[in-house]
Amino acid sequence: MAGRPRKSDEVKKAQGTLQRCRINRKQFDVEGELPAAPPPSLTEEARSAWSMAVRCAPKGLLTVLDHGVLERWCRSYALYRKYAKKVEAGDVEQCHPESGMRSLTPTVTMMIQAHKMMLQCEKELGFSPSARNKVKVEVKDDEEANAFLE
Image (cartoon, rainbow, N blue to C red):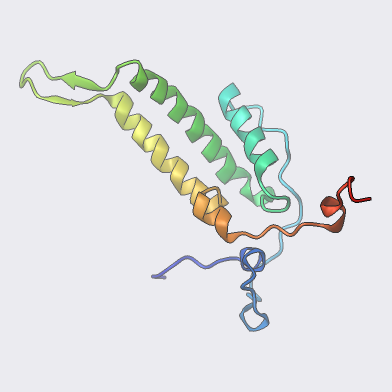
C-alpha cells in the first residue's frame, strides 16, 4: 500500500489524536512487557544498548513483540560503534594499486550499512527525536506529587 505507514492506536492515543471513529478494530492487543534483561547472545556493547533502550523508553511503549526489532537495533548499534572506532583511527580511504584511484574502505561501507539499519529500527521503535516529540507521556498523580509541597 502506498503512502505513509499506519499508526497504531497506542501511538495515536499517546499523541492525543485517537478518535473513536478511527479505532482499528482489526488490531490485536499485545500483552506482556519487554524483559529488561538483554538476550545472552548479544555482545557486551549490544547488551548495554538494550539496557539503555529499555530503561529510557516510556513505560508500555516496548512490548514482547518488539524483541526482534530491538535486538536488531542493538546489534547494529554495537557494529556501528566498532566500525566508527576504526574509521576514527584513520581507516577511511584506500588507494587501488592498478588504477591509483582512491575509494572508501570496506570499514566505512560497513559503518554506513549499520547506520542505515539503526535508522530503520529507530523509526519502527520510535527512537528518533521526531517520534519522541509526537508521543505524549501521561504523568500519574503520584509522580506529580512534590515532597516540598506536602
